[in-house]
Image 1 (cartoon, one colour):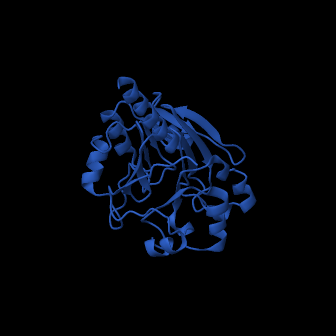
Image 2 (cartoon, helix red, strand yellow):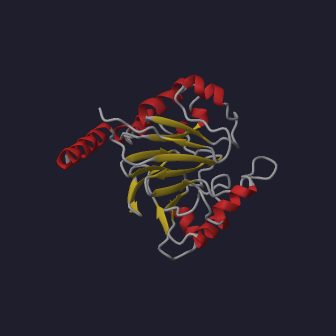
Image 3 (spheres, helix red, strand yellow):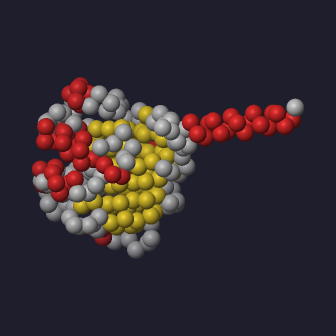
Length: 269
């Protein structure tokens, strides 16, 4: 009888392991504007989330700013803080410093331009300096990060980078404020992003509204199992979730700050 019970447990374990290819939970929490908290298994990543916004337009609610700076749940134990570029709707350096003071395990990574401006020599601040010809890759806290130089367009002196992140079997891409008008399609396609088998793609909402040229960039040069519109504020045209849903019915859209989405467990084919 004992042997039979052991066999049943082993069989059930095999069925579970063979049915699900994704062993770690994946949660995405909308922080505000283009900022998100991504929780994959035992890893937490903040992207463009430590910011205040601008008075008279959109400001991140004070209670969320406080949770971020004090490293309080859900922003406790963050492993990696990523910032795509040095604009105030994506980063506030005082908030970053406060968070890192309250969370000694966090590592900050952004453009080398931004890290140099911080003038901090500790090893908790990591700069990326990709070029138009070559990306740059690093492993930070067991998280693989590849940075791509993606021109911001409207303000060339501010360097923008897109991030490709791989952790615990999940791959994420975030465009930052990339300007697709600065790239011939063939040049952007040469980044070979679809070959990276992206699970979560974070892309500016105005590239998801049905324009044929932008559609081609998103569908053929980026891809992704799940699409997340970003930049809910500070854009012209403004964010229209209904238009995005018409063009990308599978897009994940959040109604308010701190709303969260859980990635369905993926079955093996």
